[in-house]
Amino acid sequence: MSGKALVIAIVAVSLIFGAVVYYSQIYYYYDRVQATGTQDVMLTNVVTGTAEPILYDDFQAIDASSSPIRYRACFTTSMSLPMLTETYEIYENAAPRNAPGWFDCFDADAIGAEIEGGDAVVFAGQRNIEFGIDRVVAITGDGRGYVWHEINECGDKAYDGTPLGEDCPAQ
Image 1 (tube, rainbow, N blue to C red):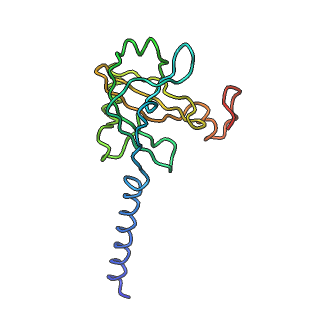
Image 2 (cartoon, helix red, strand yellow):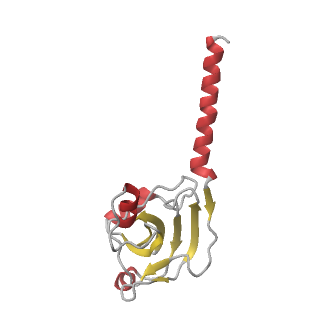
Image 3 (cartoon, rainbow, N blue to C red):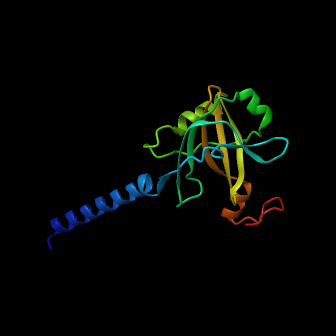
């Protein structure tokens, strides 16, 4: 086999492998989530500490079994931000993660800018939806909402090998 043919074969295999990896990461593992109509968007009540559903419309979501932090959702709500902030628990230091480009209702950079600018508030959705993972919900003043998963303190400890504290639930 000549050097030219070998180079062509290596480049072709590399391009095919790259295309397969790209497709896997952007499309293959993601599935659309069917809305239940009642419990897709839940926030943690300040008084009771339990997650309860809120009013929402136009729900769209994706998830992947390959990672617990790949969940993303978008929705709208008619509930006012002042009422939500008085009733539900605020979630500190949350930052949205990027979604695949084809899931165009979820723009992590724009959502992050709205959070930083004070135009959106992040609430605790459901704590430990899976061990070490919290579902968080950001809602803007005009009623647009976004949901994603955050690794919580217990998850950080579990993933880096630090001993878990007494306040962490059993795995």
